[in-house]
Image (cartoon, rainbow, N blue to C red):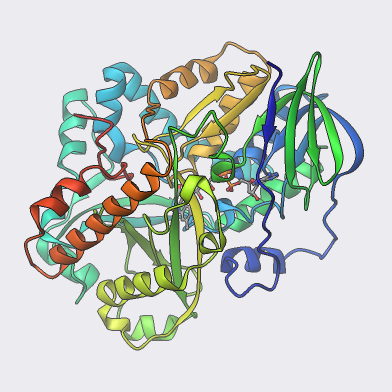
Length: 488
Ligand SMILES: Cc1cc2nc3c(=O)[nH]c(=O)nc-3n(C[C@H](O)[C@H](O)[C@H](O)COP(=O)(O)OP(=O)(O)OC[C@H]3O[C@@H](n4cnc5c(N)ncnc54)[C@H](O)[C@@H]3O)c2cc1C
């Protein structure tokens, strides 16, 4: 049967919305206000990329590297970088913390290979940014993976023993109790490991910089152009967006969680929000409290907290595992949810007791494509091999999307190289098996509520119930955790 993909109607968050990501507003404020170009009439392209976030834009660049003559069109529903790419916390993570999972799923050699790719991606990104003069506050920072409840202590042991079995040394060092106290003062930090040279970025500046460079390299970018349909015809694909259409030989699906409802992904992805709150700049207060050098990082909850300080002295905190989407429907709670924001603010007061009185200036949310193993995969559609995609970054796609761009570019051009071979490793990390709706949503809500109760009990030093502990084990993996889909 001929391919006929239908996207859901687009719901725009729009400029001036108080809950749009602060990073996006900051990035757009630095640009000259040229009106975005929407798709009109008919266009022809060799490759049409759907989605103008990191994945779509990296793919466009790597295609351009491989074939300077290729006609490349990017269709973005809103403005490039306003999806997850402009809303995240800018942690450019590698997959050291996923090493036990990689080892279990792939065996020693391929686990090492994927791990190496995740660290090499950081150098690859740095080199590209320098070459194309993209200023995005890329910086090397100290980052701590911590335990903020007794049960989280030693969450990193699996990484150290997997590394030891492979003869590798992680970039983390265990913190002594006095070091922890010196770094986190009154914060509830019980143990942790530090990485001295972690990488952070202002993500929306990166996304908008990739867009600018892509335009300079002759990539056609159409914004305000939500794709409604991709149809397969013999000899070409037809992509319908707003009042226009693109005829293309190949299509790349890079619409992240917004395409999780498509049949290919339905059983392998749950869409869940990640929610962030941020203070106004408070550099003097941070100096006074001796907090200016406090490292950011993550704790080891299942509803993982992540956060840190910005160069201008704001403090931000996020939390994964927020709103659950029914049938991958991305509603307004995926832009901002007062309920999730209030809970993350509670986490903020817990993790930063010194900043009890500091108001939260802004909050927003974004959708995350959670795969059971917490790892992405890159593939072609079963119905039509002219359509390639990236899926399942699971809240860790800032650096991984650069690998995605290389893999997708090579796959689209039908090459057989290190990237298409790496793609085969990722495909082995794919796990299906989420139940269909409404069981998935109802079950997911039950599991989420159990995780929330369990973690609150642990925070308060109480014993969680056995039922909550058992249910919590069913949650999909985070970057620091394991999943029931991957029995080690
Ligand atoms: C709050 C939050 C915090 C996060 N923190 C981190 C972090 O610290 N580190 C990390 O590595 N990762 C983090 N992530 C995950 C990371 O942001 C994503 O994995 C990454 O941005 C994915 O990039 P993408 O290009 O695939 O998706 P997106 O940036 O979401 O791009 C998809 C694009 O497709 C567009 N689109 C959707 N539907 C259509 C359509 N029908 N037609 C045309 N265009 C369409 C969207 O508007 C969007 O711009 C976080 C995510 C969130 C939400």
